[in-house]
Image 1 (cartoon, rainbow, N blue to C red):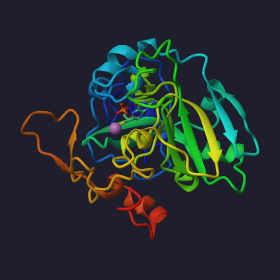
Image 2: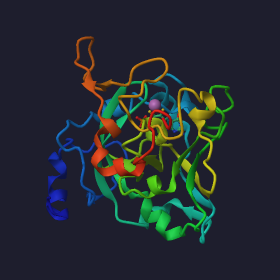
Image 3: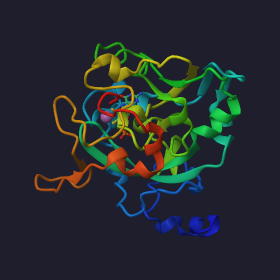
Image 4: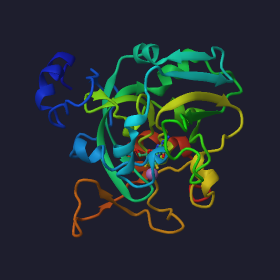
Length: 293
Ligand SMILES: Nc1nc2c(c(=O)[nH]1)N[C@H]1C(S)=C(S)[C@@H](COP(=O)(O)O)O[C@H]1N2
Ligand SMILES: [Mo]
């Protein structure tokens, strides 16, 4: 693996090309966690920022890129609540300093059947969790995202139950692959990608990766989640990428890589746990993944 210094020198011609030069740079070191998908071509920044799901800004894939400029990302803080020894409000500035930033090239696959490969910048959510010290009875982590009707045109619409929330089992949240992300492509997150801080859970469908997080709550009971509330038979709590469990209305066996468009572009086979089975499979040992979808 390249050293930090040589990696910086490489920044001009990195695996994913030049820094887009659109937003403030966010420096990082190469990841200490293996399993970066370096063999796959990174999605172009333009594609990753113009084809998004962020329903607070509209349901069309182009809507967030057009509308999310109204999102106010400063000042920002994340409230830590529930079953922890150290609850309280953490300012974004302090969160940015909590642990060294790493670059991780992860695939993100939406349940709709498309995927992207993105060089995220952030650190393992576990670093934050260790700092706030969950109590013995904490079993789940709930993520609450911003719901501001003044800056988010679709908050208040009936599409979803706002605020958009997500949840993980504590051991899933503690897994080193679970990334608290502040940037991508060497810069801070663009608004449509979930600025200023979002989750990236690479082995789960994209919707488990909540954007613009304002609250992290530790609970004993399994929390509700936005898509589960909207359509419980279609979106379960676990939502692990699983080509063997069809969505009730379509197959999950293959996916289309964004940027490789065109009617005749070959579809890719979806991999179990999005390709991270060796790393995360044991979290679900003995569970019936058809029942816990
Ligand atoms: N707050 C919030 N977070 C969200 C969503 C959303 O609508 N609102 N959509 C989810 C879904 S369905 C997906 S696929 C991913 C998309 O992330 P991307 O636009 O960065 O590819 O964000 C997830 N996080
Ligand atoms: Mo999604």
